[in-house]
Amino acid sequence: MTVDPQPDIAAEEQAEPARRLTLTERVLFDRLGWFVEVRWAAGLSALLFMALGWYVFDVRFGAIPAVLVVFGLFFYNAFFSLCAREVYQAGRISKRWLMALAHAMVICDLLAVAALVHFIGGVENHFIILFVFPMIVASEFFSKVTAYVYATATAALINAIGWGEYFFYESTHYPLSVLVSTDPERYDPLVAPGAAQHGVFVFQVCFVMTFAVFATVFVASSIASRLRQREEELQDAYLELRSLDQVKSTFMRKTSHELRAPVGALQSLLKAAERQMPEGAAGRDLVARAAGRTEYMLDLIDDLLRYSRLRTAVRTMGRERVELAEIVRGAAELFRPRAEEKGLDLDVRAASAQLVGVRDSLTDLVNNLVSNAIRYTPQGGRVTIRVGLEAARPRLAVADTGIGIPDDELPHIFDEFFRGRDAKKTFAHGTGLGMTIIKRVVEMHGGQIDVTSAPGRGTEFIVTFPPSTPDAGNRA
Image (cartoon, rainbow, N blue to C red):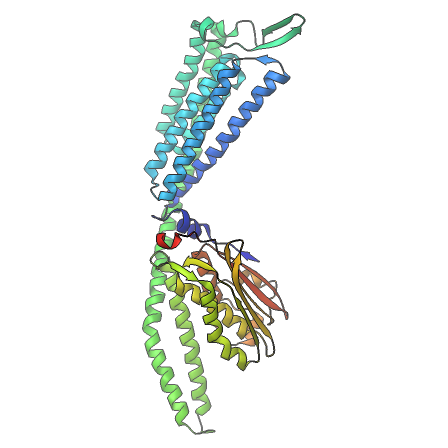
């Protein structure tokens, strides 16, 4: 079982340090990225079709200028992609910036399509239909009014190509011709003799394409406007849920903090009363059980405090260069008496493995893994801890020969307050938050956690962190 970091945390921590994108901005940015990828595919497809037409079907057109147009498309597509990546990593993305980038892309696409259509036959080529694709993009990003403005501009371009070639045929038109004889070599018009010089034909193509462009905008913008409305509703719902989640986490933190002092005082009083009562005294067993319950309550309060801090203070936690081996050795010394009390063999091998992170959170991660391994391993068992570098990535492995985890429970072990059946039988009291905290810490640091287990044979957790650059600690 592998648990990867959630995109919203890992990506924001590593690539977007300045601020969190809104849902609308994230959708727009992802959509722009998708259209960039489509543009690469469209350019390659254009080259492929032109090569097939030229070399396989012996169709002749303005090949050199058409190829130059496609390479121009590749150039501005790479430029826009690089600009988007730089602005994203600098955390300066805004809806206004995204819309400006979308306008620039659509304008460049229209000019590129117009140039390509002109050089491969103009109105004589059925690929004039390519004009509808920038209209789909415009309808996807902009309001209906803006999309219709682009449709009008596109219709003007189509008519400029058609009627420009009609009136200035000899100097502007690149006719489509096909090889009909090799001896002697002779090329005839592919469509009809002088089709671009027939006013009715030019009018027909321009009229049909103008209608197609406006129809495309009508259909695409109608669908897109409904999708945008749903996105706005989702954005509002997301903000409301996020606000409620923050309120919940703040309530958990404050309530847990206020409860800890009185519960801790109650536990101290109960333990003092137990010590003062003679062995076998009436009620001593009840006092001992009450003290045990308050200890469980303190553990629950501590876990709630840690978890609520992890949920609400990810960005405010100070990061530094941390030696993971040092934390592992500290955890081993802390839990060794408990392991020896159960007769467990605690095997620790800690090689240097540094990463940039939050020391306290990483300590909680290691302590929870080691504590669980010891807690759920029967007497005479073995707990193995390994830490070091693997392919320059810090790696922590904690394995035991304990009770193991059934396959049907593995997908749920990181759920809040979840405890397995065998875990409850082995150790009656537990908060069910330890593994949730572990997962959260791994996500905070952009890592990955793998779990392998077999009932009755033990469990192994492997945590892998991304490699740390030499100056990462200064940036953090």
